[in-house]
Length: 147
Image (cartoon, rainbow, N blue to C red; front, top):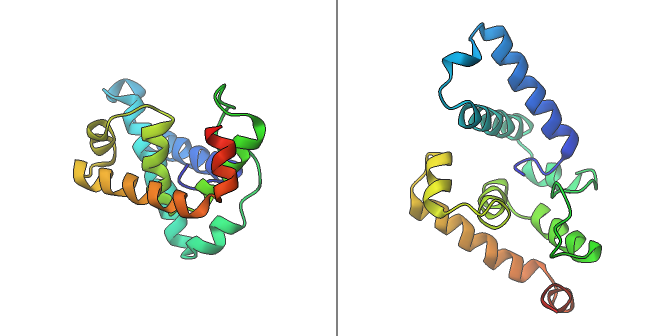
C-alpha cells in the first residue's frame, strides 16, 4: 500500500527476506514474526521512496495492476478501479493508514502501535486521506460508489 506498485512491493519483500537470511538470525528468535516482517517491509518501502526522492513521479508511474489485493464483494470492478485510482493519488503515509483502517479493519490504537505513532497522528492521517478522497473522487463517481 505504501508503494502502490505490486512489483516494487514484491521486490521490497524479497529484499527484507534476503536481509533477514543474511543476518543469520533464527526465526525462533523473533517473538512477533508478523510484526517484525511487517515493520521491516514498511521501513524498506519508505527507504525506497526516500531513495527515489520523487514521490509524485513514483505515484504517477505505477503499473495499473490492482492496488487492493483482492476484489471486495462490496465493490464492482468499476468501483474498485475508482477507489484504487483515488488511493494512488494520496501520499503514502495517508494511503497506508487508510488501508489499515478501512481494508484491514484495524483500530486507530492498533495502527498507532504498528506504526510507532501516536493515535492522534494516525487519526489525523486518516482524516486528511478522507478529505483528499472527497476532492479526488468526482461527484458522479461517488454516486457509483454509494449507489
